[in-house]
Length: 353
Image (tube, rainbow, N blue to C red; front, side, top):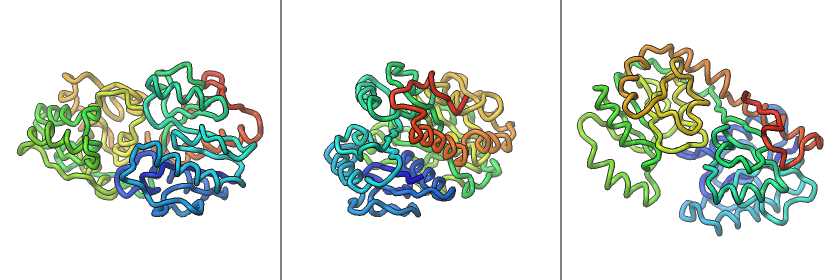
């Protein structure tokens, strides 16, 4: 196949540090290319993903993060360069609504964020002419009126992820500096369990800085070690030597890539059973999920879990190979006319059941 991939305008592919969507796009592009497909990627010019880039794209627009003007300009340039592909998988919000798409080329889009009321309005409109992929069954359940064509869980390349020993004697937290991620709850859990906590967070946006300065920083004491935003190699070492990974999220997170990253290093997850967490963590085997009052008590049990089982769960259910295969199967069905945009996921094959 000739596959066009569209990423957002704000972060290169792959990201140097934080960037879940860009990480997924990079994994897909590499996986498709490795299987002999032609891949053309529309992404910021600093992108180092080893596939051809759409010519005429712009550098990463960090200052325009989240703005429609930045995204629309990026999308217009992207589609100009994707006229000769067999299928387009667009990971932006605006792109699937763009008027001047190549005629006759199927378009797929992935919902990377929460399906709240405003997002549901947008994706209902998108589904009239494009196929919609959800990244978890929980995500899709929040807007059953949106005709999701396929539910495909994220996957990751395990080749560069070492299995840690878990003998560091600490717990760890990796995420963004915001209330939804449960950082203050993680601090409380670590203290109640009597264990040291290492904290790595993304803190670039003004609201992230304010939250850290006003809420998190005043809480920090000798029990916490703040290490800031880290690259992949450092992150995997941090996770791999931890006794457990704390993920007490406070919102219905659509997936939670960080959980499979922790499991890939062999480290069990202790967190709240909200969003897609129950689709990722096998309670009692690869971690424990429970209410806020239970999580500190789960830490000793998590330390006794089989780290090999955590890694094996990712290999079996969340590998890059599985994610790539699921997408290629969907693309083939769309190109071949066996599946049409607007087919809801309960009438389509769910690859992850």
